[in-house]
Amino acid sequence: MINRAIDKYVEKRNLKGEAKRERLGILSGIIGIICNLTLCTVKFLVGSLTGSVSITADAVNNLSDAGSSIVTIAGTKLANKPVDREHPFGHGRLEYISALIVSFFIFLMGFELAKSSIQKIIHPENVKFNIWYIVVLAIAILVKLFMAYYNNIFYKKTDNISLKAVRQDSLNDCFATLATIVALIIAHFTPFKRADGIIGLIVAIIIFLAGVDIIKDILGKLLGQPPSEELVKSIEKIVTENEQIIGIHDLIVHDYGPGRIIASAHAEVPSTADIVEIHDIIDNIEKKIEKELKIVMCIHMDPIVVNDEEVDKYKSLTENILKSINEDYNFHDFKMVKGPTHTNLIFDLVVPYDKSKSNTQILNDVKEKFKEADETINLVVTVEHSYV
Image (cartoon, rainbow, N blue to C red):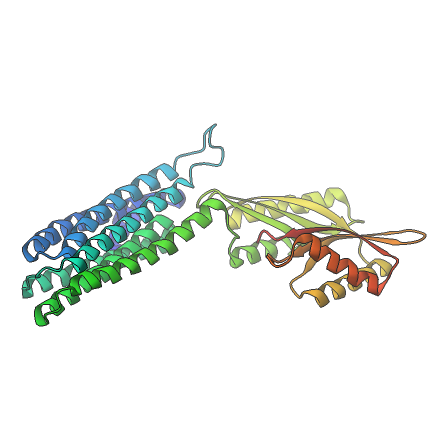
């Protein structure tokens, strides 16, 4: 059913790329609005007849879910706006902001459900029971499972984080409605009147925790987070395919929204290589990355000395010392300057994000190890952290 809808709404229009993502986001929002408004009406009627705060809260939540679908549509449309003078990197991050708004709806649902549930625990009331109410709520669960299912399909096709948030919201609704059914059954077959409120409070906590996970994911994209390991390996593979490229470091990836990624890196090349030839190689690498990975790439050339016995000796010594301190230590931009009384070793030291030691303490530890190995070595080291 979902695939047929995609074929009719998207594929037959021969849409690709951002246009296809936009259409799928809009289609998801339209289906969500229809489903949520229908469920809101049904649940409100059932909640009023039974006097169940859980069902009524579910109805309000479905109304907010319809609002979430509207936000998804708006965010998808706005994120696809072309670049302009004020936004030279496009408007892609508006998609993340719309997902953030959807997450606020999730928090609102959890808060309202928790508040109503606490009131029910303090002042318990009789909950009316009817087998048809159970049937209606079971149908509501099926509808929400369907919504979670199709939003998951659309999310995988588009990587639209708003759809991921809506998918989680639909799953939250399933938990809340299932808890409502359990509360109705317990209240009917036992004298425990506070079951409705207690179960509602438990569900509210689950919803709140799910909202925290989603908002962490969204804030990570907005604040800047490391690229995926798969993407890093893909970039490194393309850069180092040419035998003239010895290595790559200082890879930085900037995410300005889906399909709007800019990256930079330093490529190590032999210092004896022809600069014009290397420039041409790097140009071709940048073009290949843009074509295959859809990333605007900028590569800086770092000339390094190769096939020099003495440089290789000090480089091997450096590697052994650093690994003896911490297996996760790496270095790059290695240079050696030989003097009459001492030897300068110049390099950038890449260390993990260790809160137990400052960069100064790390550097002191490294200098102490080098001093034990060779007192004539003088270190000129920049301590840094990786961006990937």
